[in-house]
Length: 88
Image (cartoon, rainbow, N blue to C red; front, side, top):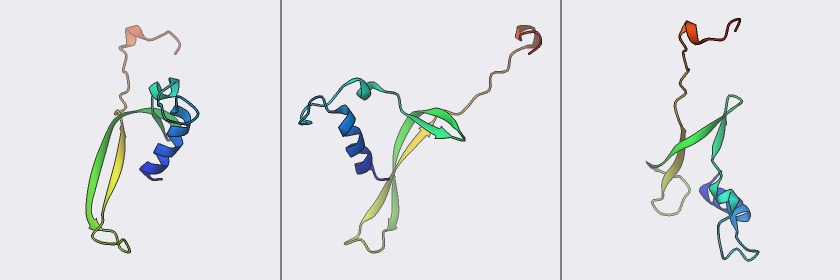
């Protein structure tokens, strides 16, 4: 998937009017999640990486980039024994 695919997909949901000249609605404020091992994790950070290798077959000296979406590291909550529910 390319960033342009994501832009086109989201623009169909976030157009404020039929002509698409105004952007913004409830979907614009939606939280972004990614599925990891069957569980949803919230995207907390996005980075653009530049790749210094030339893409073969591309015209000119085209450099590739990638958009990296990062989730928050998962932390397991460890409760002291006296705070646990009996029988759990």
